[in-house]
Length: 510
Image 1 (cartoon, rainbow, N blue to C red):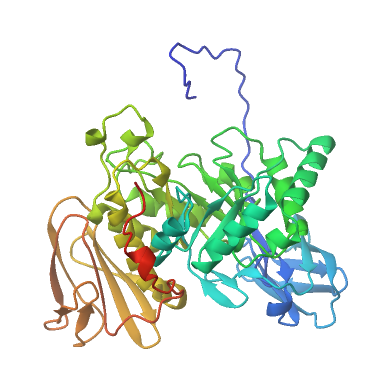
Image 2: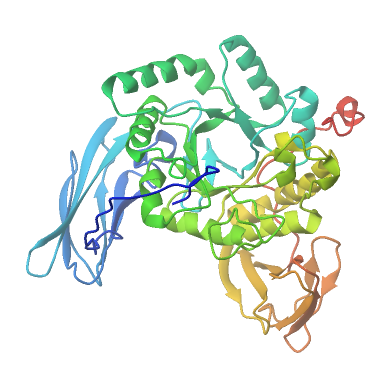
């Protein structure tokens, strides 16, 4: 219990009862084709429906039925099995899917239900793939999101976009004409907009009816099909804020019908445990958490780890909550804690420095994060902090093609447990992210696995040459060395074309 008052709180009249854990709670039944939203989109119709069941060895067989496609029985090996149906002739609509899991003696152990949908083609289709990234009309999108760009002007949008930021939040007003003009401005600079969609306050029929009416009125077709629109943000930190899951799930299901072509995002607090979080993770397409650990140790982290490496641990936790089946977008620190109080003198604001910001970004992206975000920039009181932010976002732009198209491999063991050597391969090339996980200088020795090939350090074009197949590398506190056997693949997205008039203005944030 966390009373947030100046006085004392007395909790009384408790009763306790035994809770028997549900051994099937972690079992999974999901579709792999289509992978995203259990929805067949015209641009990604493979002509079949496939899926898998993941249980434990007590499960021996399963029966899967899809309305309109028939049923099939599958034998499970160590509790796991897959299935597939031909679906070339499936018409647009919704189709119930059931999966019944049986023990070897024929006893029913668990039944799953979900809904398969097939939707017609749309001018804009934003679809997630198994690598955790969205594709907009087939083109990959690597999100670098500034939650709020203060002073939404052409200067601010252009300056942000040219520094690698490609998405931000937008709250609709009553003036549709102004909104469309803002959308055009964002689109001209390559910025995608995440619309504040909201959720219903309860599942009561009259409340849901008003919610559906508001959403329908706020997002007419010319708004939701504008090329600048990326998706909807539903709610922030709902479990930590005491919001029940059911109205949020009902709101999400309405959005799925209302706009099948744009994803919904929910952000969680850095608190709670996976079983508690899963009902909320099930009510969105994009799932993640906010974590702001600087200065450290910081109580913002609910984990035992109160330092910078809590960022990567929270990315892992959020991916585990969805069994790795949804994009994980994180909200990382874009402010100084003291700046939240406008009365605190600016000289007392402790902003993350260049090294800290870069470490948190890499720690996220190398721990199953697929969307980098910055929260709190509206509270920045020191404009030079934008320079620190933009060093990171420009580098993420340069690395975006590697993150989207590369494949992360197992880490390389080093002789120092305080050093992590993460590996991403792309085609025939290998890229290493060598990270000092501590605030102290250190060194590591390891086999980079690249033979005698020279590794190019991407930050300064220097080289690392293995000796006898080993690298010896000194590292400064929280330093991250990015190197590879070749140049980086092209970025996954383009920066806006240079505008000399706006470039002369420099940093537009006062």
